[in-house]
Amino acid sequence: MRLVFQCTECGIHYLPPEGLGYGDGSQASPLWCTEHQAVMRELGIAEPPAAAAVALLTARQRAATPPTEERPGRPDVRPSRPARTRRGTRTPGGGRSRLH
Image (cartoon, rainbow, N blue to C red):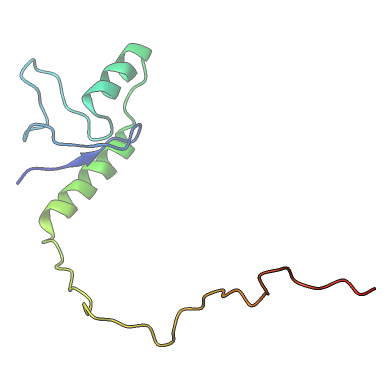
């Protein structure tokens, strides 16, 4: 079962390797996608351990629960009253006539 994470910086969903480790020996981040993980590493910002643990736990819970099936609504639902439309009640020549 693969875990899907959401980057806290850009919001994209990403799929790291199963063991959360890349081929070069570096660890995948449960908080940041690979691009933002590299940026944070260059800036010297460490991954907060508590936030990483929560993201990992959330991804594991999401993967363990089966997706809920959405029941389609009634295909032929009609409104209970007709739609209100603005119909022109004014005369074509103008609204009021001038009184002399």
